[in-house]
Structure formats: C-alpha cells, structure tokens
Image (cartoon, rainbow, N blue to C red):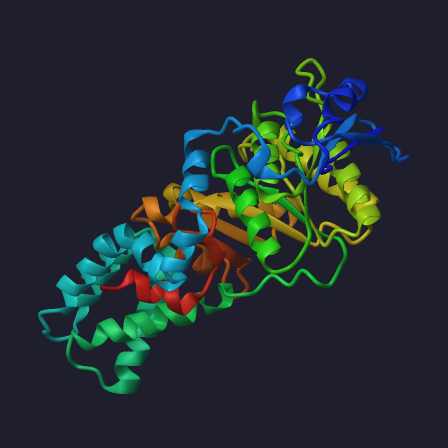
Length: 391
C-alpha cells in the first residue's frame, strides 16, 4: 500500500495531519501540511512516497561530506560563471599535467620520427591508462598519418595524435534521447563507492533543467543511509522519491521498490524514472544474479523497460573500469556509461581504454563528472574532452 505525502500551503494543519498519518516526523516540514491518500497498486513492499517538498523549508538533511560539497558548490552563480568546456579543462588538469606535459616534452624539441619516438610515445600512453588495445590502435593510425601526410618532424606528431584520439573517442559521443517512452526508465548500477547516488541527484537536476519531470526510485536497500541521501536530493530538487519503509528491521525488496516506482510514474504522468540499485562487486555472483532479477521485474512493470542501463564508473579505478564494463554488460546489457571523479585523477586516458576494448561499437559515454558541483555532470563531448587532455 502506498502512502503519498503531498505538501500544502497551510501551516496550521500540519500537527494534526502528521499525527493521523503515522509517518516519521523527520519526513515532514514545519510549514507544510501533509495529506494521506491511497493508491491501489499490487506490491510486495511497503512504500513511502515523498513528493514535492519545498527544500527551503526543510530542516537540513544529513549528508556525507562529498554530498555537502555537491550542494554548496552547485549553486547557480557558480554554474553561470564558467562554461562547461572550461570546467572540463579544469577538471582534467591532473590528466593534462601527467599526459599532456609528457607529450609536450616528447614532441616539443622536434627531431625525427623513428621507432625510438614511437616506443617513448607507447610508454606515455600506457602510463596514462589508455590501455594496450587503444594504444596499439593509436600508434597504427599515427603510422598511417605519417605516411599519408608525409610527416617528418616529431613536433607534427602532436596534432596527428590529437586527431587520432578524437576520431577514436567519437563513437562514445551519443546523446541520451529520453522522449521515446513515457515514463523513460533508467536503471543505474555500478560497484560500491563509485558515486551512484550523487550521480542520480545530478542527473535528476539535469533532466529537470531540460523541462522533464523526474521520479527517483530508492532501490538501494542494502547500504545504510542510501534511502536518506536519495530523499535529500529529491527534497532539494523538489522531486518525488519512492522509498522503502524506514523501519530498519524491515528489509525492503529493491525489485518491488522500483516496480512500484514505475507504476506510480505511469499514474502521475512522469517523464523519467531514475532507479537506484545497490552497489556490488562483480565477483559477488549472488549479487549479480540479484540485479538480473531487478531488471526482469522492471520489465514486468513496463514490457520494454528499462530503456537505459547506465553503469557508473569511477575514473580513479583506471583499467579496472574496463573489467567492470565487461562484467555488468554480460549481466545486464549496459547501454550507457557515466564516468565520475575525473577531476581527482590523472587517469583520464581510461576513456580511450574503454573505447579501444569495445571497438568498433563501445557503449555510449552518456555523462562525465569533472567536479563536485550539481552542474558538473554533463553529456560527453569527444572534441572538448581531447582538447582538455592536451597542453
């Protein structure tokens, strides 16, 4: 049975209604009145729907340090003061210091193009986590360019490498079209600690800014405080959240939570459902089987759903990100990637590694995160990304 919480303008009625609803007081605001209604939807889990709360009247929810930074740095004034292209360049500063400066040192002095130069370049690419497959492809393409264009000076190789890298990453640049279905169901998964919940909050804001209505499904019933963190994002963005029962003694079924979220989205005419799932290691086979079940249950709620399976990756993991893509793709059929924390690593070359490993049809890199601000998660643009990697 659903319990729907809806905010009203009157302040005086809240105490009486709160007592009648029997819900936890922390979900209510001092200047909001709560009204209980019911919706007959078959479910195996008790669900609380927290909807349309005004964030400015809420008590400050408890957030982790990283999410507090997201809220503080994600103000509109900060977003207006800096273009995203410059944010990408700033976010990839560590990658540029490691990768770009080594290239400048290799090519800056000129000299002839010979095997020794190719070997040094190969070392630089591998240490930047570009990966063996992508490095091999880039070097082969460079040799072709050298012959075709008649290049003789090492300094000319820098522009040629930049062109080759941009061409390699171009297949990753595919926009996520969410208008094909209503609701458009996005299943979000990944290993522990990659930033799924934070990414969901940022994605919700991104879609909201596109004029689309969003509903969040708190399908991570395993991690402590996952429910509360997602609810905090929902309250701050004025977005409805479907969450399991708050009683710690009652273990929610993630598949049931997402099932009910989809049905609620249908009833309310919501455009996009962002479904969170619990983090899991790819070696935990029983948990990988569980997430397959979640996907099957989503298909029961809406036959062609999920319409997008987004895998969230932490750029700091380097080559391990490639292994994660392989494992989750086998289990779920990954259709898109979100690469987070690029601002905190020198391993930006992992983007090329993913592309090289899954060539010629890599999964789309839908979004990249280059900062902690709420507007620092944006669609991937190959040209901007490559420009930011070079000095």
